[in-house]
Length: 607
Image (tube, rainbow, N blue to C red; front, top):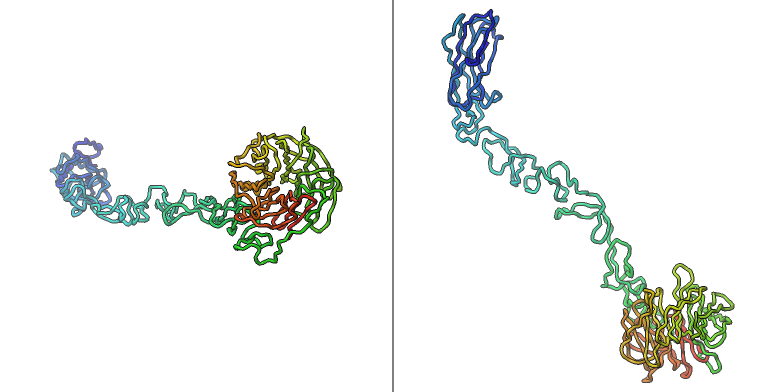
């Protein structure tokens, strides 16, 4: 057996007490581990080794080992020592060579000296590679074992290709795994931070956790799939439909105006817009680059010229009136197949577009009429009378305004979009305003300080306007109050006059006319008094107005005339007998207009 001298050893009773004294001297380095091996010279398979404890941090010293004979061994043995750096797992850096010796039967043999020499010049615990150690540079403490470094071209602290070196070379890193060593932003141990179809954290996946392919919506509200914008590392919304460009279409004719942006979007079409942009007049749905030209004094197709390219005869036809005939106070057209006339007599006349004429008994006198989309006519007259005549009916049904026998001067209706009964509004000379939803009784909604002569609106109650005068020369106009309260008086500016009629084109435009050439225009809630209407220097008393936009306004006069205003100039389009006043105008479109008045006058422009 082997035993270090200071450890204390015992042996079996069958063995002699003789021991072999082995001295292991080391110098030039600090052994991490020293081992001694003994081998029986008679049988090489008989071999044993023992680790010898080495005092720490000593570059020179002697270790003592006692060798006793093993059971069954001869006394002749071979003794050898070797040393390793750092620890017993380190490289073997020194060997003594084998010495043949004999173990005495008794006592202790003379010392068997073994030497272990190696060089650790920088005293870092690593022996020079020249002595079988691992110190690749024995002149510097910081350089010892040859290591693997990693080429770090982009100096982000992560390398790619391995580099073997004793000392860390420039532009290398201790960490590997950089999959793009020319981009300092790409390296392991980070989250994906750019959307670029690349692997930014070197985990073998591209743009993971960025929700690519999920739903996205772009600036135009077009739905697509989330993808990478490889130009800047941001996100793009791909596979989306092209947005639609819309143009402002204020008049609802399906055609917008070039240069007036109505939005670019994939959402449902914005209100009051169109995908077309050829409209030249957003005040009239009868003018558009998508319309064919018609014979109606208007430039329908927006080519700059009215009535061009069509056969056009602009005369009015009908009955000019004669003494002894009852006066017509009102004319109303439904735009389908009929025009109704009513007035001082007891009959209401229905004139069909096919030339047929029907008299319907309905005791008047009547001052105003309105025809619904279904073809039913509603009447308003003296003593608070109201009446209705369904299509094809042979007689009328009458009622009266609630708690009033005042003459009803104006009447207008708003069709029910759901197909039910229309809602009508009636105004009286005493300033009363009634709402009527047949067959229900009328409801008084307001009383204003004015002699109301007319009321008009289109599609919605918010467009309703009522006009008249206070006294003989103070014009008045009132608008519907959407809050349900009293109607609101409008500011007409300075000036006298007596308003007789009003026509609302839409929520933006309206016209009102009256005595002594009074001609007012309303644009987006603001009234403007236009130039007094005259013919040949003579001021006209205006009885009714019909407008199809800013460039097509008709008025009827007490001098038997129908005048046309194109937005800048007045022209005479019909001249009846000078002593036969025209009291009413109506028409659903510029090619179907009727005028009626005193002495049974009824004339029409129909193309």
